[in-house]
Amino acid sequence: MVTKIAQAIRNRQILICQYNGGERIVEPHCVGYGREQQPLLRCYQTAGHSESGRLGWKLFRVDRIDELTNNGETFEGPRQGYN
Image 1 (cartoon, rainbow, N blue to C red):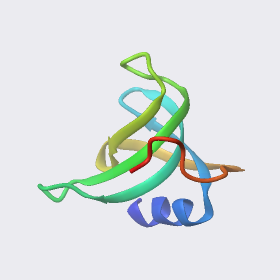
Image 2 (image 1 turned 180 degrees about the vertical axis):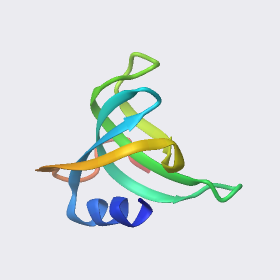
Image 3 (image 1 turned 30 degrees about the vertical axis):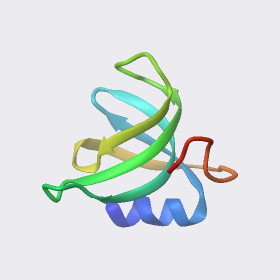
C-alpha cells in the first residue's frame, strides 16, 4: 500500500480510503515511517468521515487503512500549511 500511495503522491492523485470506520477523501502529500517503523501518511482531507469533526491536515497509519482507491481526480499541489 505504501507503494500505491507514493505513486499517487508523484501523480498528485486524490485518494479515497476507509479509515477508522469511515470513508475519507484525501490529497496525499508524504508517506514514510515513524519511530516504531509504522507506515504513516501525511495528507489533506477534503471530505468524508472525521472523528474530530474537522477536515484538513491529517496523519494516518497506513497499516490501519482498510481500503484505498484512486478516484481518478488530481489536485494542484501542496496545500497551505504543508511542511
